[in-house]
Length: 335
Image (cartoon, rainbow, N blue to C red; front, side, top):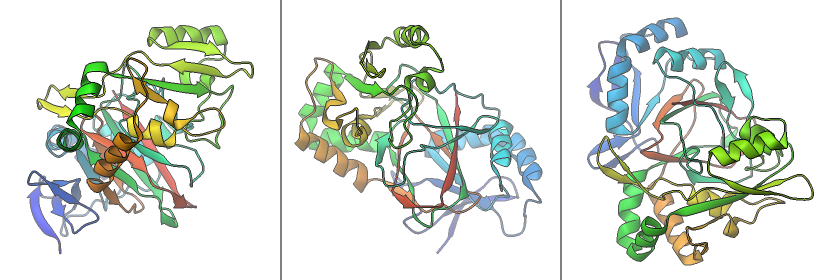
């Protein structure tokens, strides 16, 4: 049963749907779902873009309040439409430097999402949280839904922090005190068989080793070169939690779950891919609790063609579920 919970002008309605499309946290639906009202349809993507330009400040206010907005039922039928959709909201592109996922440019500032095989685990993380600078907003667009599964899981970071502090207060206190390092071996050239297979060339957007070294130093990353040409990196000390200055809420802002569970390939050992600031590795039982907190509070929405989700990367962690081809979901990252 659908329930109207608001309107954005005469043309668009917010709706609360039954699970698994939404959950309710602190009295608010997550994600917020926005769809054209029954009596006002959009003619084409150009019509949508004009509406977005008109309502962009309202939509940004809604994003801050609800943390994620799923646009469903709009005529966004190709990656080029998606590119113009995001640009209509006035965002600037975030340069994807330091991320682990192998990606390719599709059109404009539209990227493929992680190119790793569909059975590879991509666990919960904030985008580029393993680097000093992260995008503030990210968008995903579904061009072709998976034949089976392939959901993009999302979870509220402040809810995760709140639940972790209840269940593992000593672990949370240690993380807050010590911070974390992420350790990753970057191959010489992209490895699309790995969820973290982005080579040092594309990780740092360079072609020469000395250029990669310079970019790594700029990010405070230490490194060493391995005999096969791979680059072993250890990030600067990074916080595992951050206060969102806009809301004063504490966020579980990290990629610990993804590193510990999914940094797994021919070069990397997951259990050794993240550690406390003093070099101590995470304890397995604490990681099990974290996984349970993330999964039990997550929303897994099934993609439909044309869906666009707008995510506040400070407030929301996301993950990719395994799937059966075909699946084409694209990304746009914003400063």
